[in-house]
Length: 437
Ligand code: ATP
Ligand code: MG
Image 1 (tube, rainbow, N blue to C red):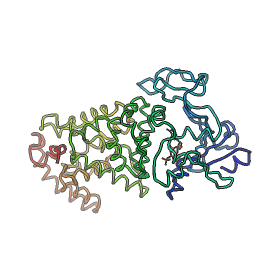
Image 2 (image 1 turned 30 degrees about the vertical axis):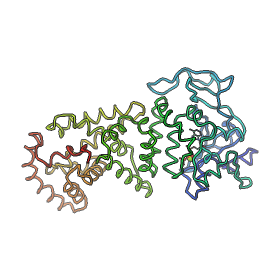
Image 3 (image 1 turned 120 degrees about the vertical axis):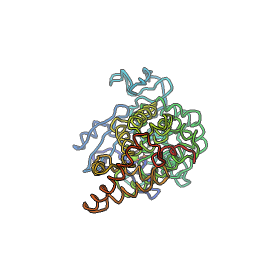
Image 4 (image 1 turned 135 degrees about the vertical axis):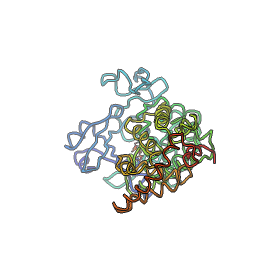
């Protein structure tokens, strides 16, 4: 790949996270290439190549299952004469209206946010538009040298995260850099340089101007790439959770040290372990964890006899999802998944005879069961039911039948109580869901 570009007379460098990770002895997640070839020239060299992106025009080159991102060097990103002002971003869908190829290569909005950056330049211009010094090292395959214009190697050695240029300007250009700072702090265990950390307190609200879909993507990178529990800690400490998901943050502010927070952190740690073992993880489960507090709070605002009614639970899920979508977009399929996971909880807590076998077949059973296990661990659901479902999955078909039949009688006795509003003690685990320990 790199050699093909070189043979064609272009420069080709590995750049960004992969060089940083290699220097840290970590396995790079993906490889980014920077070159002086133009996107159209890259496309001519590689048959398996697609040009993507409007804001940043890039080439994606496919090698089997791997995609390598190839970017043409760009000139510095500070606003300058000749950059036209553009209409404000439409808050509804985050799309910038009237932005087509004729309007110029680079554009900013009124707050200095970059809307488009396609002015090509040289490598020593390209470096200044990268975010952190640790992400701005170029590895030259021609002679295996590392080109370092900004002291990135020194910062990596000191495990320090430092923005290139004036931090406030850089955050204004792209507020997502605040989340990236938090992500690298969590992922790499780097310390954020004080000058880079300071403006976050005053600028974090700028995140509300970022397209909601981009915030969703960034949230997945924060929580589903193996360091979610640490990301949560960093986001809370830096006031960024409040800027990203205000309703989720305010639950934790009003319920300090709650069981729900412990459940979330444990759930994130379990998710991290799965990522590290290369097991699949899903945004549905993540959002169920994040929204647990708001959902529980909404349910508890209803009269206690309605806490276990399906309508109450579904309504709480819908409200909580809407509440969380102030800044971020949660795609519908994940919102529906969260709903199903919570709707399964009463059925898991009170299985009714043979119907339990159908619950086992439910497409969301696994996620619902995992949530039940977590809730049971923190005393928010009856632990004996968690054990029961675990056993049900392990035993033979005959034993399974015996288990649900045995349940039949018990469930029949329990059913009227449920209809009366679940006044029996073990039917009220949610009562403890928000009790601040
Ligand atoms: P990861 O380990 O998550 O892949 P990364 O540093 O490679 O981390 P990418 O999002 O893959 O992050 O971006 C690749 C490189 O592009 C970064 O290292 C950085 O140099 C540059 N970059 C990415 N996003 C931004 C941004 N918002 N502002 C400035 N530079 C950026
Ligand atoms: Mg990368």
